[in-house]
Length: 204
View 1 (cartoon, helix red, strand yellow):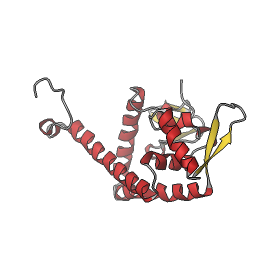
View 2: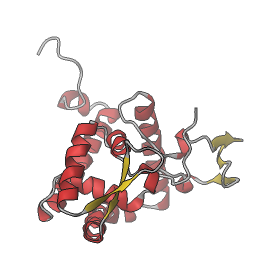
View 3: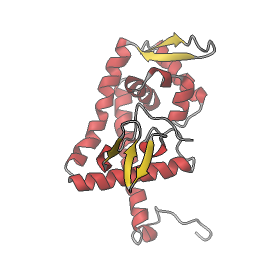
């Protein structure tokens, strides 16, 4: 295997380097999410991305409910989202709303049936939350802080796109070594840092 680049999955390297162990652990967790999402999608005769779209629309504001925004949110092409949206419209789980400000664009919203499926499907995450509840407060705060920093760095390097987290927000600043939100006009504890904030304004 001469010339092969170094990999976290190389057991010799993995067992000597904590960073590699963390990367592989994250990959195992992402696999758990895929399994849970796939089970939910099979139950509803939908694809995983279609389930993700329904869940996203359930919890996010109207201006984010557009094909172009969803494509950036899920790191896929507009064509992929358009195909999924078309299926969800056909199944009467979504409905179109014309955008009066832009006639070339439209918002999408959940129908009553779409909302019911989204609410039930969204609970798949509880399987992941239950084990974390057993951690100590300190363990949870260290984990959250580390994951936020990791997501921020992946966002900066362009690996993942839209992030509505504190670190990418124009309201966020560090004041005397502490996290501070200019919108709330208050300091934020580690456990108050948000990963998906409805008031997020991208910093420039």
